[in-house]
Amino acid sequence: MSDIVIHVENLGKRYRIGERERYLALRDILARAASAPARLFRARKPSSPNGDPTHIWALQDVSFEVRQGEVVGIIGRNGAGKTTLLKILARVTYPTKGFAEVRGRLGSLLEVGTGFHPELTGRENVFLSGAILGMSKAEILRKFDEIVAFAEVEKFIDTPVKHYSVGMRMRLAFAVAAHLEPEILLVDEVLSVGDLEFQKKCLGKMGKVAEGGRTILFVSHQMNQIRRLCKRALWIDAGGIRADGPAKLLVNQYEAASLAQGEVSAAQARGSITFGRWQVEASGTNVLDLDQGPDGVVIRIQARVIEPIRKGKYFIHLKDANNNIVWSHLHYDLKLDPGPVTFVQEFASLPLVPGVYTWEVRVNNGHIWSEFMLAPEFSIVSRTDSNVYGHLKGFLNLPFKLRLQAGSADEDLQRMTGLIPPRGRNA
Image (cartoon, rainbow, N blue to C red):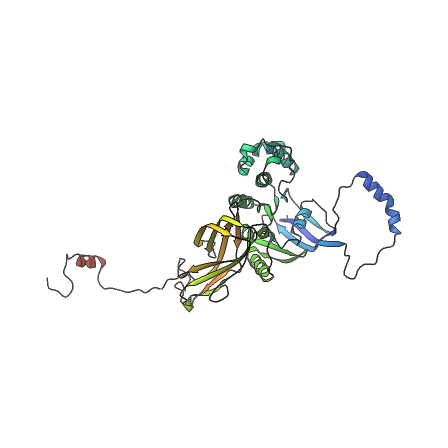
């Protein structure tokens, strides 16, 4: 039996510009059927040489397969077609051409609070949303306490959802979908609303779902989330698949392309600040050559403040290729006005083992944290690598000389304390 659970072939979705898909009642269908013969005799407008300007293809000729247990990240700029793809897979909308086959119990979280009714309480919405997602009443009752505890809304569970904050609705909606225990889970950019701690909690939950052999398709503009959760990624651009491959490789390529084009991701643009290029001041590149022997190392990180920041925090750390933090710093009382700004980090030295590293920065605007992984990666090179044979452990590349001294340490200690005379003197 094939382990392919999602099969997409030549998928395409076309929308009419300025028109929404609306619900069709029986009278609309009958009226449309009655007018069909007349429409056949209407003169058609000649097609434009550049295509129909009143329509747009959100997806076109998309084909791929996903195997059971895969965790696939879907990346791409705003309007590329990521959400449309997930909506077709979730049967929220139908394709214009091609087909998408999904085998297995499907759970989806495409929008914050999907299926929630504002007048109902949190408790009532858990049962409503769970039923919409395909959970039985017995299953919801069995998992109810766990769902509420995960969402951290115990005190407000009997309060109407209309009084919930966006974050509370999002936490409760994610908790319901995550505890559905689907064979396939579709998640679309729902984690960007929560704070940093809840984002980590959700990633941990999805990681456990993946460890259970379930399949996840995860859309996010937060590239660090894609790196942590996914082994494979689909890069969607202009309605088509631009690349399909290992997540870390594609994320690096995507970030480099975004920086080259001066793009800002939607998740970053919604925050108070966005980060752009960075460089080692001495070289003007992302490479630090330890053999050049500079008096110090200066790292310049360019950013743009979108909204004023008062009493904010700036956290930066450096990670190695194994995701270990080798250095970090937290700066309090950050005050920034809208406009361009450069964060200048000055180090007396950075004696790290040559290799590839990653700068990660987080900014708190006084309310929530925003997290950024800077691209391209930070490369440190040296011809005098203390770990040149690659079998030693450690983070530092420190100048080192070994000096041998005759005699034992115990004998030297006794000589220093006067218990035995120094060499060359008679007792």
